[in-house]
Image 1: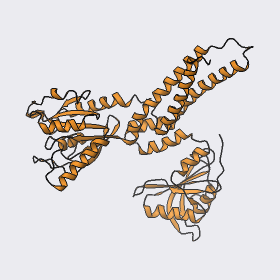
Image 2: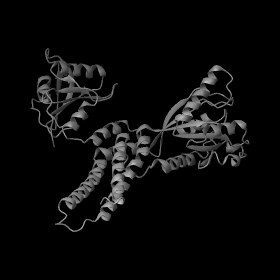
Image 3: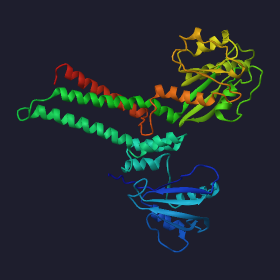
Image 4: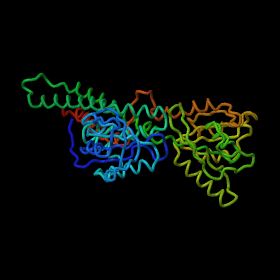
Amino acid sequence: MFHVKHSDTIAAIATPLGVGGVGIIRVSGKGSLALLQQLFSPSNGDKAESHRMIHGWLAEPESGQKIDEILACYMKSPKSYTGEDIVEFYCHGGMAVLQRALKALISAGARQAQKGEFTKRAFLNGRLDLAQAEAVLDLIKAGTEVGAGYAVGQLEGRLSRVIAGLRAMLVSAQAELEAAIDFSDDLPDFDGRSLAARLLQISQDMAGLIRSASGGRLFRQGLAMAIVGKPNVGKSSLLNALLGEDRALVAGTPGTTRDTIIESIDLNGLPVRLIDTAGLRKAEDGVEKLGVERTSREIDSADVVLVMVDASSGLDSLDKEVIHRTAGARGVIVLNKIDLGLKANLGSLSDEIKGWPVFQTSALYGQGINELKAGIFSYVSSWAEIKGKDYIMVNARHRECLVRANEALARAQQAYLDGMA
């Protein structure tokens, strides 16, 4: 492990803004223990010992005026998050108290930490590699338990171990090739076919990681799913049914929704942003026109489009126009209002919705909603490479590096085919 020496000691509030029972201030750097000794008075007079929580009072450095009754913990380098000396102050969770405590630490010689600086120091000090450091933010931002599980796997080094294994195989192959060149008289004949086969296997492993980037993006950013259709087909009712609460206004009058409504759900562990849009039709006023224009933008940017059709009536020209507008996207057809009958026939649109799953629902009465949820997840999994809990998902930076490495492997394999080995 390497260690980068920082001359300054940093401090920051480590808990979210707001009121809570406990608020934490973290301090990192060589001056952490000195700050603890200067501002903190243990209630029993004990000296700070590493990784031991002690009770006492935090006070102003100059006046000695008490700020808060707290718990404090000193963590001696290198057994800390950053690899440096760290002190954490566990105060009461009011912002006035936390801000005053932070101000006292800065007055005593600490510096306000920059965004992400604790994790940056952990990386620079060898406590985390870059992939693990990126996983910290993924874990903090995870919107579902499954997404958090993937981030934890990355934080514990799952991706790093896989990459290290691939690198070891490449280094071994390189060493074998160099030895064959430098010591050709002393070694058996070089087996180029075996080397090419190993490079192919490494390339296939990299390709699998590259494909996982699409699933990784969805778990990090959430799946954007737009609910579209002509007015009064039940889009807002479907939104409410998927959410399990009455979030959108539902009325029998067409055109109730004039703006997009965005809510989030957990779909089998996949974070999904549901977007209820204005009905697609010829707008009758300026406000409705803006809503329809916004719907068009949502269709273009969505990962999946839920196209709703009134199952109780035949497809009219407006239904066909909506489907034509969404053709080419990843889509799901929802035949809604099946409690009123099933008359819609999609046969004439088979080319435009080729590959799209079709579900029947009664959003008003909750019929078919669970099947729809399961079907959407299965459909997304079919193209987003969403696998089991042990699956490794890479981010955009990882993908770019892997693509370049795989291109280099492809050149090496081609060189063998061209007779260079």
